Image (cartoon, rainbow, N blue to C red; front, side, top):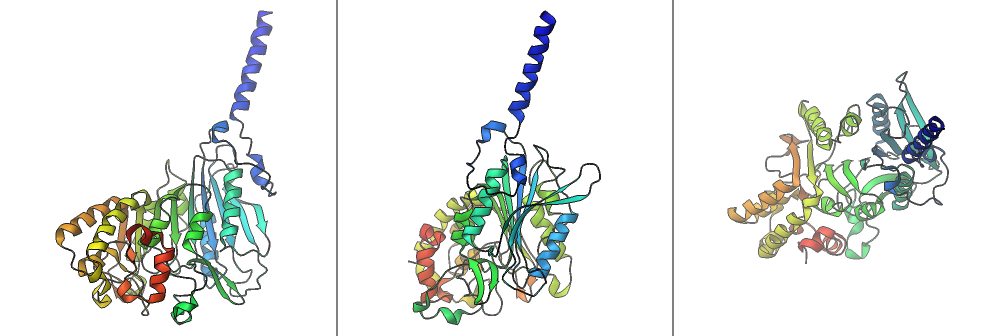
Length: 419
């Protein structure tokens, strides 16, 4: 009887151990079904140790060929092993035309998982969810996809890489044709990240809508898109991601190195977004001629509030000088007279802010900046006085942009650059 009692005790204990560590949502993540009826799981149930990396490839535009190549590189790089309970998860949300350069409007947005087979090492791709004829650069689509991921893949951490077109904090379409937005009566939809081609032109997301669409907190958010490295974008994302990496200037079409990106973000004990950005810079810095063109910045977004407090004081004290500053004397990050992205620190230096106050600014910047690098020039733009973050310069803007900035930009609400 004692032996039988011990045996049943052991069986019961094994069953309890098994039930404690069973991931109730593990198989649910692969059925591709509707997740709307499922609630967000309690993290304490299974105490997940896995990490989730989300690659958002918004390539239904002129970058389609390059972004398709990026996804091929992603498949050839480091892949999480198998679909085990604690396996890290690599997910791709993508939309590109079936044939490069041919846009029918019928291509779906697709979410799929990439992983490797433990025995053979071969790559596997599992489609999880399909949104038929749905643009990807839409806050509703992004929110629905990320909410699905958050419900189906409980994890200890999440991170995102976003690749597409972008134009920093500017309104949708303003960068390509500012004349459509002037005078102020042309104040239309205001969007600035990602792009889908439609019969009526490009459709983008406002950076605030993009931030609001993210349902989970991110360890990192890397933006592989032009002109995103502005203080306005960093501040908008400060409550969504701990670390944000982006470029103050444009990004050459090849963008990040997707052969190595998953190794840095999933291959080590902790994600290393700085290594991703360092790889990007070192690759372009080793090129010659116009191909030696890159800027990159990584910020600790949790420190943006302290930077805003320093800038608010300086903007108030030196308001008239900033308002009348000649932009030709200020370090810019732009080409083709798209004068909306000037160096944050150099604006204040050229406005006559004394050395002591600039030292305070430097201290706040050093707390924010985890990594910053720039080649000597970018496609002909000299990059000699760069702090790593761009900002709007009101003296080089317009009444329309001032009004948009005043009413729509969170950085301005915190610092009162434009009153």
